[in-house]
Image 1 (cartoon, helix red, strand yellow):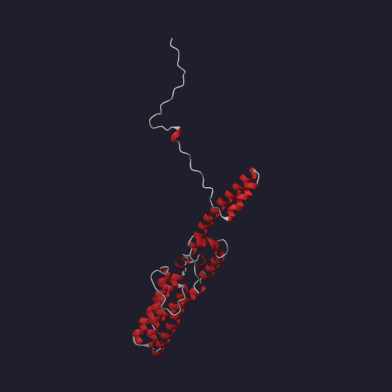
Image 2 (cartoon, rainbow, N blue to C red):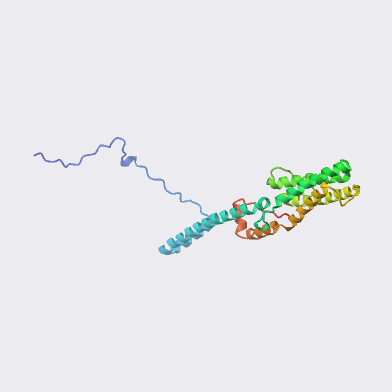
Length: 253
């Protein structure tokens, strides 16, 4: 039986392997890493803590960060949902108004004013000062209403004297101006009528025009918007509105 040869032999390097000579030392961490003064203070404080407390402090900080992120996410989603509801009050109304809406009554004002002006044009002539003033007021009112309905994307209201950056405020002012001009036009038409109390179809249109204003004045839109603003203007809701790009809901005033 042949004796086993236990003498030391130099092992050949396997192809593709590496030897101790080819091993490269891992790069050392940059000792000049810069921390902010706050980070330096926190690091020094953590080093002075016992090991168990240091781990606990890290865990508490992590929990606070997670809770803050959850709060922002949940609070932002809740606030966004609240805004989505409030932003629809103009078009679909407040539940307390039983189907009456700001948009619908303003449209009634728009249409009935146009009918009164058409009759006035036929009665007084297109050159009548009252007709022209009423038509100008109607054009401004229509532009403001269109701007509010489209979220300010369709109409440029900067040419209106009462526009101050808010389409809703401009719409309110335009509605007031339209009311005054239609009243003057109707009064002038009554002067020309044989019986001022029997004006025919235009009398009905004028009545609907004023009825719509009465409804507008009694809607719960403004109180609802005021309550929404009070709910969302304080901290932290005001901060979340900025973070999530939530716009304001404006009163009709």
